[in-house]
Image (tube, rainbow, N blue to C red):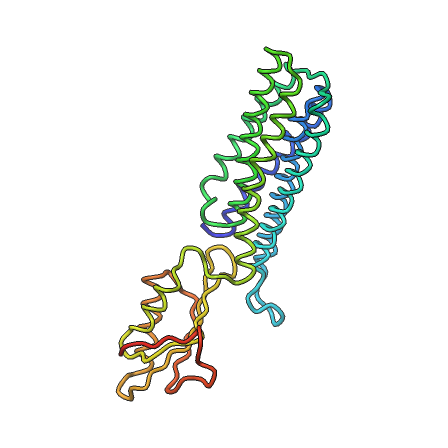
Length: 296
């Protein structure tokens, strides 16, 4: 899916989420439900995350220039990191507020709480369906999907809490449900932050095995050794590779060898943005962890 294809589902999800967020805030204040307010706060981060994602797509469309030769694609990863930080903030707020309330729970209007949470669940399910088709193609979309997924579980929790409060009259259940929402959000936020940070630090893409790439390059016919091998991602789905390849055989056609290596990397590892420097002798600093000997 092209970047342009992500915009429509994000816009629809943003409109639905923001509209219902307002309804949840009003409902939470009216019912004195922390669980409902915490779910609304989570929905606020959803709206912010979706808005950031849309901004990232627009900025990412800008062409490369003399100052940013890779273009603005990495803004998507920055947006994902911001989304993760927002999730952390909301989860911590929920836990603190629940701690303050659990010993002195207010009266909860469980009927209204149940109605609002049920509508919220419906909105979440619609948004999840809209985003599900592209969540595995783009880190930004994955972040937005996780936000909505968290909201969906939050709505389920609020519904269960409303029913239990209605049947038992135990107001502290509301705070327990809020804590459960917060604890569910934290590991998801950490996973998203870890993944986006890995890309920002130009780590090896998770779907690629660097040892397999080393072996494939160093054992390729005509290759004596390789060094300065680097594999990283500019943004989701945009992996790049650079490597120095030493070929000391005069009978080898370098143009043909270069094309073979590029084709191999594209076919075996789906690496299409590659920079390969052929050398008759290794660079002076071609040693250590980035140097690998082949078997021509």
